[in-house]
Length: 280
Image 1: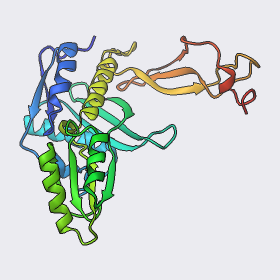
Image 2 (image 1 turned 90 degrees about the horizontal axis):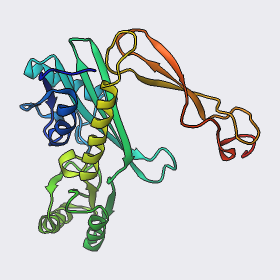
Image 3 (image 1 turned 90 degrees about the vertical axis):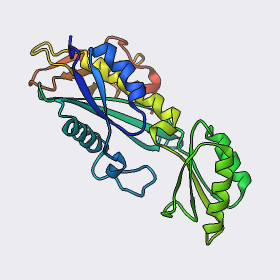
Image 4 (image 1 turned 30 degrees about the vertical axis):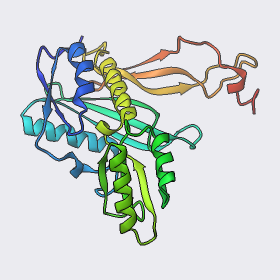
């Protein structure tokens, strides 16, 4: 079982993520989460698009983790990075994917936990206070904060930290006065401390990371032994032909080259509705 024997783990964040990550990982790994400050993580990208995020979501998480490790001088580090977009099933609903990367330079490994689900990440462009009010209620304001800017989603005059109705009303009036087209762009604040739905997703990613770290390689004992590939072919319950539903998983070690294939045990057959022949 992978443990840290009371060692400190660097976590660079300025948005309160340590409050939900530490209670999950500290008892599970016998570690101490060291909250690293003194670096503006908004330099690595913002959800309000004023600072673009270079590279991929995982690249950004790695940079945060490495920066925290460098600032603290620790050989263990971690960081979280989120992304938002349409749901992967219908493309109709807002979706949040959270990654939590763990780096252990003693073992030379990187393990990534993840979680995804429905998001609070709406927006509206309007000149009518009633529309702003309806939007805020729909997005569960003030528990979920709101960001305003005059004129359009790309206007650089951003008002953040809006967390009460009085401030929302006054900020709307101020943005409307600044707008040449009499419109105000409102969006849900996606920073972790300002978005409880995202906080829940980060906690789920921490639990997923803990599971992965507690899964040891049968060959070398390193943590992070986890499925990396699913192989289709589960037979249809009606016609018996192979389907696209996965029948086995390939498990891979993050440190050595050990790999094994495990057959699926939770079900032996695919439903006819999942079969290309029975449900073309």
